[in-house]
Amino acid sequence: MSGQGQRLNVVPTVTMLGVMKVRLVGATRGHALLKKKSDALTVQFRHILKEIVSTKEAMGEIMRAASFALTEAKYAAGENINNIVLESVRSASVRILSRQENVDGVRLPKFEHIIDSAGDSKSSLTGLASGGQQIQACRVAHVKAIEVLVQLASLQTSFLTLDEAIKTTNRRVNALETVIKPRLENTINYIKGELDELEREDFFRLKKIQGYRRREMERQMQAAKQYAEEKQAEGDICECCP
Image (cartoon, rainbow, N blue to C red; front, side):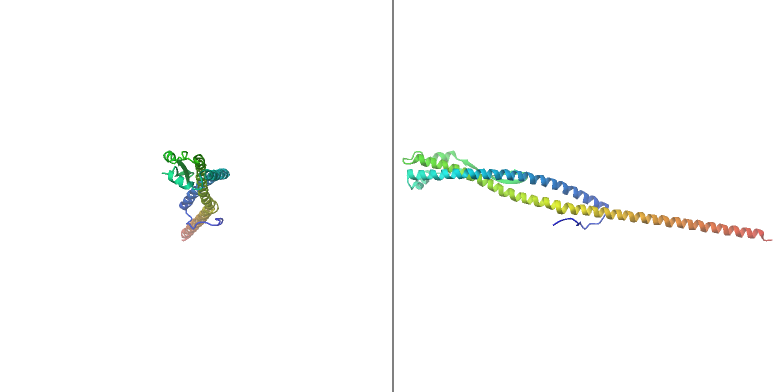
């Protein structure tokens, strides 16, 4: 929707002209600020996109190594290593912490992994008689995979949040640029035109009144002069009478 040719339905007064000018200044400043915000969010958006691409490329290698380490552990300790691992684990050694980061007024969710050293020591599998070393290597490989997955989840969540924020900001920028500002400018031009027309009408009315007064004064002066001449003529007649 375009604001070209449209205006607000207002009374063309000097006060309303001042109000419209103030609103136009506010809309112009808001448009400039939102444009800067959109540019900053776009830069951050592209930076996160590059990080997502590089993280996905690294994730393929890390997941391949984790899968190969699991295969080695099953080969060394047997297929029933799940029971062995579950019996040795008392608490989670990797936890996820969620927080928010403010980027130009947009709150981006961030996920971080925390390794619990207490839980890590309790779940150590290096002392197992058969395949303990391979199981420990499998554990380390999968911890790295979890770290990459958490990082990727954080990046993709921030990516989607930024994408929605950029769309919303761009819609506001376009609305200010194509609808609100042109409509305010058209309203200001309309009010100025109406005020100029009223000023011309007042000037024309004043000229008409001045012309009427001038003609009235001339008529009165002419009537007074004629009256004086008539009186003088009557006086001359009276002096000539015997």
